[in-house]
Amino acid sequence: MSYEKVLQAHKVVIGTKQAVKALQEGNVHELIIAVDADQKVIAQVIKEASERDVPISYVDSMKKLGKACKIQVGAAAVAIIR
Image (cartoon, rainbow, N blue to C red; front, side, top):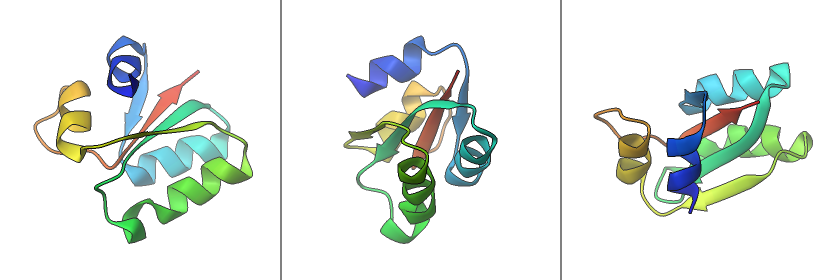
């Protein structure tokens, strides 16, 4: 389900650092997190999303999430931009 959201989104931000920045700017509609990502890597972006009441969806694979974003590597986090 969330993979389709990423594919259908007009604009996304890929990666935890970029997602944190977009969250701090208030531009994120929804956050997608890969559950197989390292907890240390995704902890900050989850904290930022929770503080701003941004909905978080979880997917099972970084590799599939990266593929949905049309990149060659896995993605731990993807922010769907308003």
